[in-house]
Length: 93
Image (cartoon, rainbow, N blue to C red; front, side, top):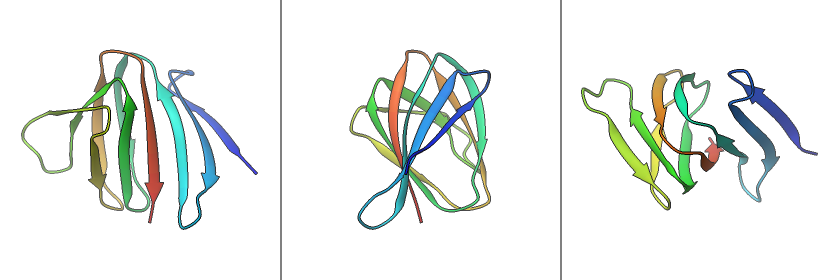
């Protein structure tokens, strides 16, 4: 069954589900600045819009657009800047 969550006063919403191989979430983010922590390795794929990301240990922000993906290892924190409403897919290992 689906697991529906909202974060940051409803500015981020996700629906969790099981793919054929790994757990995943698909969601949307409104404009804003957010910080997330991971409990397991995450692969984030931008579906539409863009995410500007500061990965753990990085000095620079990088913008990922539709079709781009990035990986965050387990037990790390990363920051996001969202300039336009954005949809994403996140898989967990």
